[in-house]
Image (cartoon, rainbow, N blue to C red):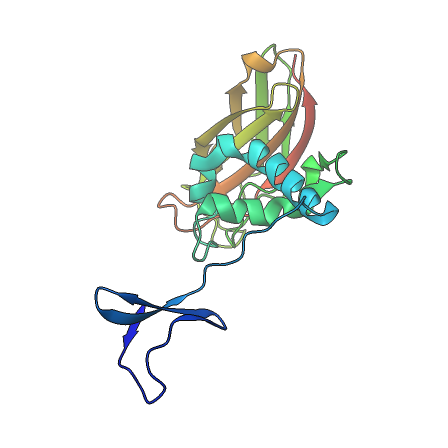
Length: 213
C-alpha cells in the first residue's frame, strides 16, 4: 500500500489498471487489486493436475521426515519433501481417473554421493526383507565405509511405508528390515546412501518388487 500527495490532477480514487485508489485515515492511498477469483468448473487439464498432485502427495507424505533430509541439498526455496514431489511427478503414468505410479521410476533421494553397483532385496523369512549391497567404499564417488544406508518398502494395498533412515553403514553389506505388517503382500523396495554428517546424498536405487513371506 502506498500513499501519495495530490498532484495537478487531484486525488485519485477508483480503479486504474492493477491499482485501486482510496482515502484512508485522511490519506490518499494506492493498493494493488486482488487477483480475480476463478469462477466456473475446473478444466480437464486442471483436474488432471489436481489428481496427480493428490496421488503423489498421498504416496510420499508418510516419508516427509526422510525426504526433508534426502532432498535437502537439492531443494532451493522449498522443503526437501516438496522437492521430492517435484522430482517424482515423472513417475506418474496414465490419465485421470486411471493414474498410477511407476514405482521403478520413484526416487527417494538425489545427490552425487556414490551408489553401490549392486543392491538387492528379497524375503526368505516370514515378515522380513533382506537388503544386500556391494561395499564400494573408496571406489564410488566420495563413498566411505561410514556412510549410512537407508532402506524403505511400500505396500500399495495398505498405502503404507516401512523404512529405516539409518539402517546400517555402507561396509555392512546387508540389513534385515522387519516388515511383519506386510506378510503375504507385495512391496516396492528402495535403498540409498548418505554421509554420516548428512551433507552428501546418493540418488536412491529401486531394488524391485518383492513378495513378503
